[in-house]
Each structure stands twice: as structure tokens, then as C-alpha cells.
Image (cartoon, rainbow, N blue to C red; front, side):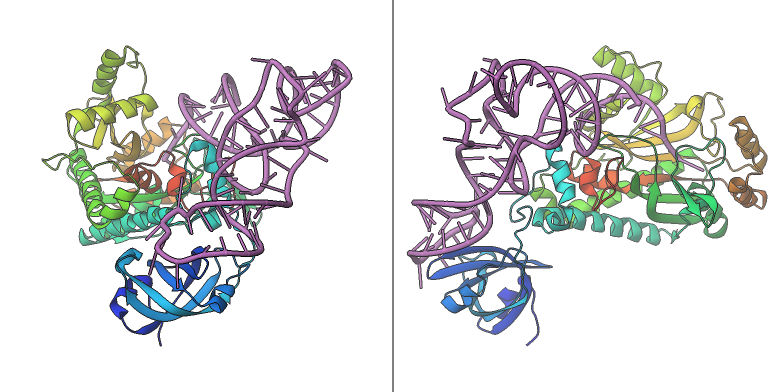
Length: 438
RNA sequence: GGGCCCGUGGUGUAGCUGGCCUAACACGCCUCCCUGUCACGGAGGAGAUCGCCGGUUCGAAUCCGGUCGGGCCCGCCA
């Protein structure tokens, strides 16, 4: 007799069958007991009448691993319309310690409870609501992979252990590498550009490490990025169109495939532009609108303030019917050496993709001309001969077409898709300035 | 790094203008009762020196200082 899963009980009516899983809940009512057994598909209700069988559970806690052999019975009063009767219970792994938190009802995600949420993550993730979050995350990654692969992108993996950070680098984690200093990659930026010279179109899903001491609801020291890079693009807009189109495709897919889970997690209704094009506004336009609307002058800010990001997203949802909006044409003061400058000499050809209040992606066109790139490095105090850059530059010296792409924050994307308050809630085992375990 | 806030059984809270606190309530746990529960119900019980250190006071969960831990916002953010 092979093991069946919780959602198959209803297909076994009248037959004796067996399930295996974790004791999820017990309700003892004298001569009758109901227990719920959890497996990878969900819960099965088991009705136990035999006192000796009920007695087997004495002293055993939620989490006990059980095998239950019983008769599948159609029962409208049971969740799912079917349940197991006259069971024989076998305790596969007894659990006698009381769980540190209760998992049979939704776990609090209030900010003041997040520490408990993460401290008890090992057990808490068994909660059905928590499971939904990470199933949605898995679906999102699957949807990105499928879409990009269908569009002729090759998935790559680049090293996360890098040499010492060159001058001009930002905060990185340093570690000992057989006696020399190494750093953890805070972006696959240079490698994915190199790989454009090989496959034209590449993407990578992987961890990045940031050592900035940020303590906010949108930062972690380790996060999951989707990096996309595509060669032979005609212009900036082509890159924006592709990344915007990919994001909309994945969102639609998620809202279709995970409709029930998103609903039960109270995810916001999805609003995407009817013409299939993510709306675009310049940084200056947003500063002006925001300053006018809130009487707070931001026209001297180079980037959008966090409050502006929230504000323009609300504006976009209400006025433009879109949960996604591009903020484009950043001032030169934000320029990174590998980004292409606009011909007007005032802005950078880079846009931020905002989603429900936060930046989820930066989408620039790259500088692909070797001489210009070397000059831009020098302008920013970077030595092109540094080992950290010399190999990168080879890709340009030996032919790299005009290209662009994005770094796309998966954690934030999942967070905002579901409507969670903190990016860490969308991460299995978050890492931040105060947390390195579990 | 700056500002503001929080810290009470396993979990979530009340108490916190000092003494009725010998610390209360809900969930969970243990014992007993209960044959259709699904936040089951009922009776009883165990479990906290109130983050830690020091101070003020006749007296501190409560006031003060320090310290540790946590949260939120800002800054930072290839």
C-alpha cells in the first residue's frame, strides 16, 4: 500500500489507504478525536474513535511524525469533503517537546513581533500561511526563468568570492582567502556584462551581499537578485520595454497561478497598464509633482526620497492604473562608471522600476565603448589596471555590442506582490545587521 | 552612523503618575469530563525572581543612570 497525499484522499473513497505527515492539530472530544495531519500538499482530517489509538498520542506534541492507515470516507462535514476513519496510528518520529510557537494559526507579522518570527523560523515556516509566501516566491522565480529562457536568454552563475575591493567600491564584506583579502560579491554586474560577449542574452538568479549598515524594512545584507543583461539593443527604451514586459508577464502569471494563495494572504489587487507599457516619468517631473502636492521641496534631491517613491507609486496606481512605474533620467551625480550618459550631458540613461512603493530594479543602458568606459572609470577614481577591472575591460576591448539590463530585487518583488511590510518577511532566513541566525 | 520607541511565564498582552502585584488575562502545556470538531466546549493545575547591572526609596515590574537585545524612520545602498 503506497502512501497517498492529503489532496488524494478524496480519490480513495471506500478504500483503505495510508498517509504520512506531521501532527498539525488535535481535538480530543472524549469518545471521538479529530486530528489533522500535514503533508506537502496540505492537511488531512483523521477521525479516531478507538481509545487505544487516541492513547498513542498521549504526551506527543504538534510536529510528531505519523503514519496513519485508515479508510477514506466521503464526508461533507470534513475539510476537503473527505477524511480517514478507523485509523491505525504509527508514530514514526515522536516529539515530546512543546513547540516554541503555535503554528496552526497565522503567525503575527507585526513589526514588534518580527524578532520572534525569525528567531522561531525553523518551526514557524511550517505554518500554512508562511508556506504560501515561499511557494509564491518559488513560482515567481520559475516564471522569470521560463520567460527569459523562452526569450533566448541563457542562465549563468558567476562567482561570489571576489578579490579585494578596488578603490571607489562601496561597502563590501571582507574575508580571509588563503591569506589574501577577498570580498563577497555585491553584484554580478561585471561578469554578466562579460557574458554578453558570449551569449548576447544572459540572466542570473543569485545572492548578493551588501555590507552597508542599513536598518530599514527594505534592506538586507544578503539578498536575491535577478540580473538580466542583453546585447544588441538599439536604445534605452528597448531595455525598459523588455524589463517592464518581463515584470508584467510574471505578475500576471503569479496572479493567475497563485490566485488563491495571494487572496488568502490579502495581496492587493493587481493593476497594470492596459496598453502593456509601464509608464515612465523623469526624476525632475516627479520632484515637481511631489513638491507641488506635498509642499515639501525635493527639487534639490538627486534621487527620489523614500517618501517620494511611495507617493509616486500611489499616484501611478490611481492616475495611471499601474502598480509599476519607471523613474528615468537620473542626474549625473548618480552616475556609475559602467552606465551610459545621455547625449544631453545632464542625465544618465538609467531608470528605476518602482513597484507598490519601493524600487525593485535599476535598469540602465551600459557604456559599451572601451575608451569612454576607461575614461569614466578614471573620472571616478578607479584604476582600470586594477585586477578587479582589467579582465572586465578585456570584454570591451575585444568587442562588446551596445547592451543594457537590470538588477532586480527578488525579495522586494515577492514582498510587494503579497503586500508584506518588511522585505525580510519574504525571505526564508533573512540576514541583516543584527541577524546571522538561523 | 543619527533620531524616536520597545523589552513582563513557551507565545501574545495587562499592570508601569512606586505599596492593595504574594504579578493579571488569552493562547499553548498537564490532569479529568465531553461522539462531528475545524479558534471545539467545560472543570482543575503547573509555569515569570517583570532583559541585565547599579542607583533613589522604609518599599521598585513601576522612578533614574548604564548596558544588552529588538523595532520604526532617516542616511548609506555597482
